[in-house]
Image (cartoon, rainbow, N blue to C red; front, top):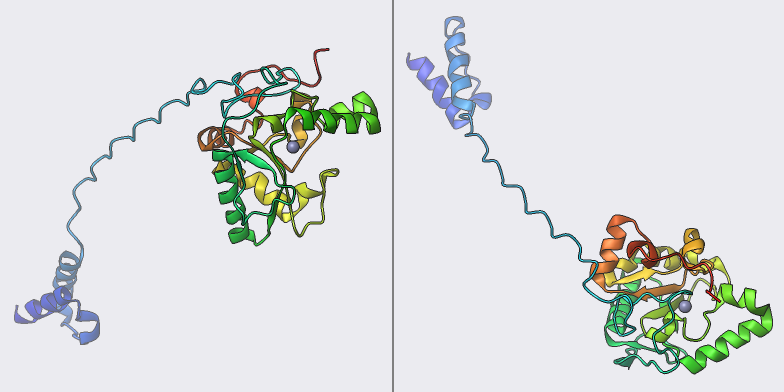
Length: 265
Ligand SMILES: [Zn+2]
């Protein structure tokens, strides 16, 4: 019994493996038993069943207006002109922070500008490219000239694939930015940016900052615009995240609005 007690104590102290103790043949079963009882932890109490986390509240698709041009959820497309578009000016336009390349001095609404600033910084930190704010808020008169430029060059049908008619441009809401970078060598006329590192990163990550890629390549029939891998629209993090999570890429589909492949008249 003395030997067995020693073996048991050695197991209890965890030293048996190094002790070289060799119990007699007759003692082996007992020492094995002692080992088992000493080293096996007592059965744990049944794990408490964690209460199921409360279901997240259903996303409220009516939280903001899709009609009011002052709303961050306003949906502007070829069937949904900006209300009072000839005179509408967003309420809180600001210049972009000075550390953001903005060669033409475009403005955005304040929240959209803050989010864009954070997105540019994250892009630089995560993939090392430098994004450029290429075209932001455009007022009605600028859009008149922009559309006329394309109409002169391409005709009405061609212009309508490329540029919004005055009063129908998201850029007039102060919530849209065309983004380029300093390294891809791309421009606003070709799909090139979409396959560049910056364009790929933006498409995958813009939602984190409340932006969505507004004119995806596979949604031309819904949006009425050819793929614009540079055109990002601020809708706020809640909506952008919900769209990302549910995999619904256009505002029209998310809100159950009609597809807008062309103008009504
Ligand atoms: Zn644009």
